[in-house]
Length: 181
Figure 1: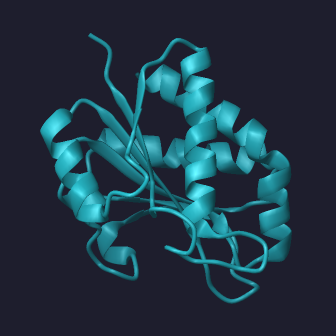
Figure 2: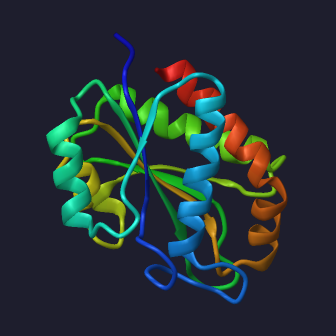
């Protein structure tokens, strides 16, 4: 039996995450999630998405009820910081598996590849390395889980490179997840 793929939007709609004058994290996570989902479905892959208005605690409960350790979860986020902050990074749980680390590493590399290096690779980090030190979507679910910070919304050139390459990025991430399945 194939592993199930779950893609969640890291925030639940407009105004719920980081924002800049160019993009809103809460809205853009849904856009990218839905685009990757579309690409996966074109390949015949069944993919599950979180309900848009469900708070984090509800998303975690939904995942815990329906999915198992072998299933793959990718949570999409966008970073914010000073205008010079740049790059993509992925977080894995503090007690990560080799598979989680490898998937996170491939997601970072795919982001760099899709943008021809315009978005740099900040690497794979553990939840304790995040600003929160613990990430519930990783620590409180049993799936093979990665939190993907696509790029910095506060960096204008990076945002424009992401938007310009969004379609290609979604295609390459769908290819990656299809192979991981």
